[in-house]
Amino acid sequence: MMKNIGIVLSFALFTGLSFGQIEKEKIKKEKEAKELQEKGKEKEKELREKSKEVRESKEIRETKNSEIGSEAKEKIERENEKGEREKIKGEFKRTEAEEKMKREGEEHSSEAEEKVEKIKKEKSNNGNHYGQNKGELSGKEFGQERAKQAKEKHEETKIELEETKVAGSEKVTEARVKIKLAKEKLEAETNSGKITKAEIVERKAKIQKAEEAVNKLESKIKGAQ
Amino acid sequence: MKKTWIIAFVFATGMIFSCENSVAETDANEEAAIEQIEKEADSIEAVNAEMEQKKKDIEESAKEVDDLLKDL
Image (cartoon, rainbow over all chains, first blue to last red; front, top):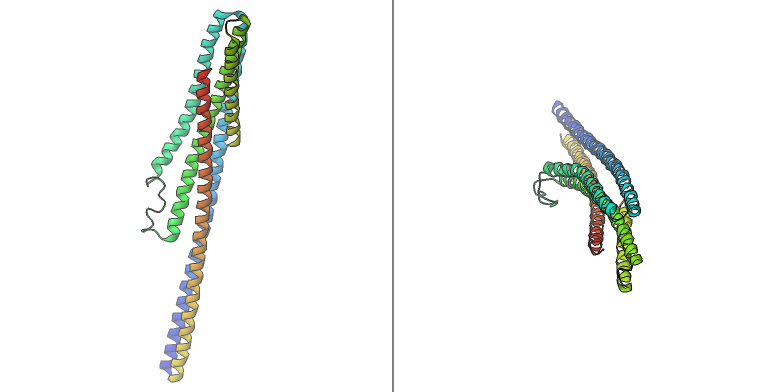
């Protein structure tokens, strides 16, 4: 009888231990899932903050660019009134302003480039071959690694896109100034009778084409926001 | 003695079933978590592709503007 009781007790003990282990595993899994969710939320927050920073710096750059652009335009108008000599001087100043604009843009973009380089250095693998280490990783680990790489790539792409948008905005400002100059030059030459009607038509068409291309570029930049 | 063994057998069988159920449940949870992570990665990759395309479009337009400005 005692033997039987012993067997039943040992089974009960075994059952209790097994259930305990299962419960432990469950709790562990739940903990892991929660940690994952928290990590995801933190990364999302980081991403949002970073994009906010990039947007703010872009806005600052845009206002700077527009200020520089308007200054250059005013200078050009004054030059036309004063005459040819002063016009040359003004052009020189304008190129200086453009160079300054470019330099500023480069400074800002170099910061972004540094960020990109940092991200690249942090990456331990080569490129985006998400499946290359799958053999060593479990399904969940592989998925997490892939998501991590995708997020890193996302940050990198975001910075690159911001850089392209800034460069595009600078190009738009520069192009608008050049188009205005070309228009004024054409008008002056038309009034002085230096060029033929055919030439006038041809140059007007070129100016119009350039204007259309600038508008297209501007809308693409706006569309990417 | 026989009775005890029957009780033990029934008990052990029940235990095995309950363990199997628990393992299956854990596996299902694991698969759901993996699926969720994969979905997240897919959506991020889709956004990345879209951003790359926008970047390419802007670069092409900027090049076009550059070429046209040279003609002025």
